[in-house]
Image 1 (cartoon, rainbow, N blue to C red):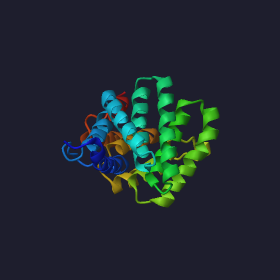
Image 2: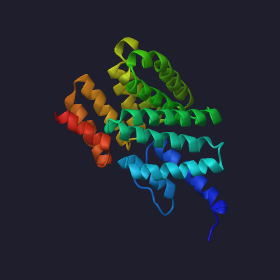
Image 3: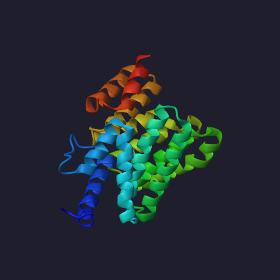
Image 4: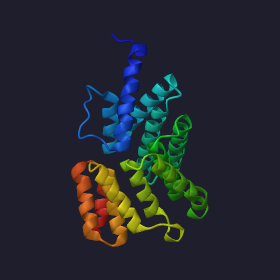
Length: 248
């Protein structure tokens, strides 16, 4: 039987597969036999099932305890914490959501401290700062975190302008920022379209594209985008919620 110590290098390699799965769009299928952690990350991403997330978080924390200077592991943990944030926001549990976004920011910042050359990490941190604004009082949180969103997205774009996640994060920046502070729905749509052109398997980005088209007033294109998201991932709870909103 393989000892935990001898098994660690393989687990670490698996974590990097999981990182790519999260950052660049998941493959059509992940083999649990060949890549157990990658499969767990993809399952959690698809369903946002809380028990899966708890198990995955515990697993990652154990791996980080064994290798506390691994930037990739912290980045995966930050994304898992963001999934928790999605769950709590959908349940309108604001206090739990606030705790989750703070933990996600802490993990993303730690990842960048260890490796500041990751476009994925800077994009994720930009998204998390944006979520911090949406959870707080916009009059106070906006001036504090808004410039940080722009700064992190600019760093991500400079590092990796062919990364679909970088373009998706920029789209969220344009979509969620008030117009008087540089928000632009048309630019948001352009960014999301660029993202899905780079990786057409991103169900999450199609959800955001649908939100952008809805905000623009184009319900037909919003419906097309959300149907594409559901085709890619029928279990996506955010896609289901957005589809219901479009029917109202």
